[in-house]
Image 1 (cartoon, rainbow, N blue to C red):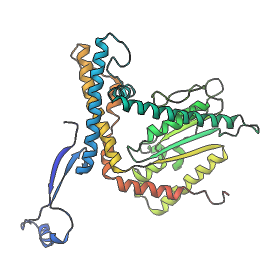
Image 2: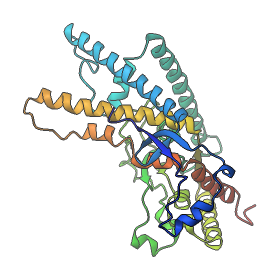
Image 3: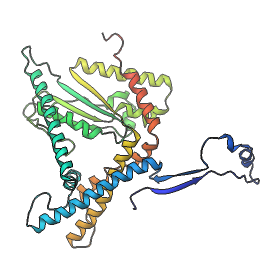
Length: 367
């Protein structure tokens, strides 16, 4: 239970300490006129508050994942007892293997549904890859973009990675060389001296003969993979300019500065079109119930990671805690800021929406 939020009760103070000057204003308040309970019950974790309802969403998903883990461990022991040696007869060592390991702990019919859904998704990805290749081999010449920017932005725990990977697979299947840039940190002092959009990079293809496909997130790809086509490059932006308006300095900027930054973003968009670069902007949103559910899953993974550390360290036999990069990947999959963002859900959604409304238009004179 050390992983889960703690139960708290917040009581509204209605008495006044007459020894303090501020208490005079408190004593003058008529509490009956204010809406709200005298007691507030809920759960607190990593600086975030969860209502009973959202804690229930989190706890149900947490228990589901822990049950899958327990079932997967039992099946793993049975496989080892029968002398089987495969990827499911040993404990997971990183995030990708953990997801596969947990899948073996689900009910048979649930596993079949997942396989069917993945097969359907894989077919759609292949169709998208085929359409891109048709554009490359069109009669009038190559009609596909020379470069693609996949800009993934939105709320935390909204599915940016899982959904974005599908588009990534389609591009890799069509032969695009893939790269990735993360813009989840504030700009450096050197970057602040340059124009705002300069720190956001464009896709650049390697020289012919040097390009080779790389899985930028070190996760197994479910889509088609082919050799890259010379001159074709795609770049994934993990967060980007909108993040500065939500988490960075622009969140407190004046309206005039904001409008200037909007104009710079639109100018960048137009420059991409002039260079035959497809600037694909994807904004991910979800409701708070889904966010709480995802946090429950990640908390379970964090608990499993603790268990795996003890398990693997004891198997090693030295009694010394070992550093394992794969397990660190699981542990870092849940960020403490995700919980703070949960409480700021409506505020962050408003800021993101405001950025989109002001940048989802073509620059003046573009048409």
